[in-house]
Amino acid sequence: MANDEKEKTQAKSVLPIKWNMPADIITRFTTNILVQTIENEFKLSFFEVKPPIRFSASEPKPTEVVADCVASVIVTADRLPNFIRVLEEQLERYNKKKG
Image (tube, rainbow, N blue to C red; front, top):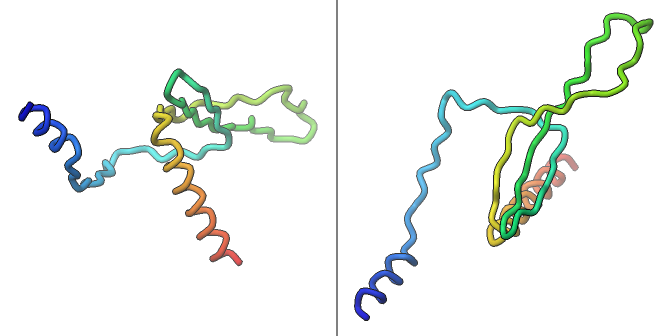
């Protein structure tokens, strides 16, 4: 019984996070997001659309564009509301500064 209580106490302890952004991380621009539900998680896939380069207006217009997946992450259903809240707060701050 004492072990169970000790494990519960250890599980609830909070440690500070040391945020690390590796120097070689690639930051990508995204134009689209795809959200899929997988049991108790959400898979977020971020895409970048790169329109083809046309050198002349006389060239035929493309019939499609390719969206390359630049990042894919899985977030638990428990954490997703907090992520959404943080994004909303940052958007509100941005809009206030923008006027």
